[in-house]
Length: 250
Ligand SMILES: Nc1ncnc2c1ncn2[C@@H]1O[C@H](COP(=O)(O)OP(=O)(O)OP(=O)(O)O)[C@@H](O)[C@H]1O
Image 1: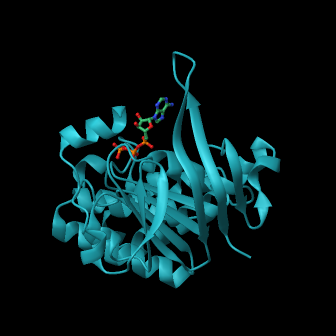
Image 2 (image 1 turned 90 degrees about the vertical axis):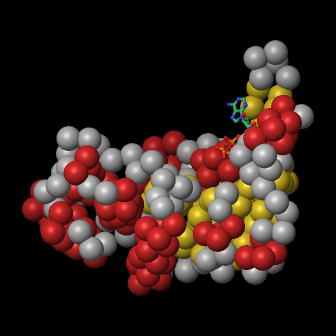
């Protein structure tokens, strides 16, 4: 059984004038345990909308989204929220760490919402995870005193501290220089493999996308499989800002 399955998914939102805007259409995607999936798309192609769907934050307008074979539309919202908390880890471009809280206090956050673990166990798990991402010496550091790469490592520790089965990374290297981005991706790949989690990376960067095992391209809300070579992923040039505006408004 697939971990996640989207079958002919559409996402439509109403515009202020009452007309519907179709953001995703006919999206089919399966994610198996251990998969490393990358999705590239231009600005405005629907990446965030798709990510929200994969993270069970939004529901399809039509079509089916199943997690562990269960149609998420049949779940009560509380069950969806618990499932998201226990089984899905999110990593974002801007790290989204709590300022004024130490690395350990940030990494522990997802555990606070998990039932049945004591303060000391939560602290131990957060510290172990920070050690795993190479920050054992920065446990008490505040985000403002950490480099971008270190902050993203804290965010990875936070995303993985509950051992989720699905990791969703939205432009995880977007705020990092090339070398730091590569080392963060190396770490993410390693940990995801160790834990047999599935990783879905959404990016506009073909080099980051090429690291996945299965590649998809999102064009104007339609998802298609792409070749595994980075050269082919890159064969359609990314648009200028003018083209993007035309795509979004067109
Ligand atoms: N609630 C909404 N109401 C109206 N339009 C929306 C809504 N949500 C998304 N859109 C539009 O749908 C399109 C896809 O949005 P989405 O944020 O998913 O794109 P994206 O690929 O993540 O873009 P970017 O890379 O720039 O963040 C955009 O044109 C956006 O303006």
